[in-house]
Amino acid sequence: MTDEGLRVEIRAFVEERDWAQFHSPDNLAKSISIEAGELLECFQWAPDADVDRVRSELADVLTYCHLLADRLGFDPAEIIREKLAVTRDKYPVEQARGRSTKYDQL
Image 1 (cartoon, rainbow, N blue to C red):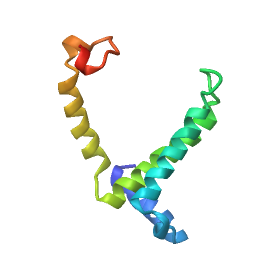
Image 2 (cartoon, one colour):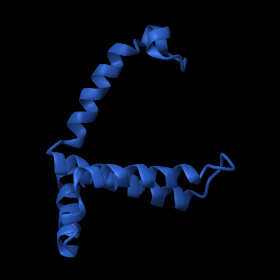
Image 3 (cartoon, rainbow, N blue to C red):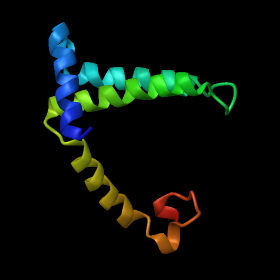
Image 4 (cartoon, rainbow, N blue to C red):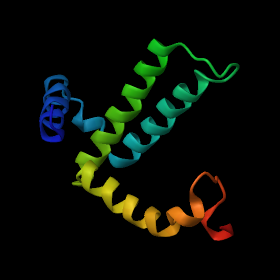
């Protein structure tokens, strides 16, 4: 499925339920954070989490991210590529490969 196909499917799902009225940018951002917390909870006490639960929580995070991007008129693929370009400049391969050091300390 293409990004546009996914966007259309999510929009239809929301429209069928008349949920767009609740999808203000701030509510969607809050929902992303809440769902990200639930995803993190999967790993709270052990590094090996239940794969099905992780998959479900990750789907929730991604869905809300797509909803927020759509609400703000952003193309998810475009903004990810833009951010990758910025991060690529901050972390040159020659300096960052195999290191977790923050860019200002490379």
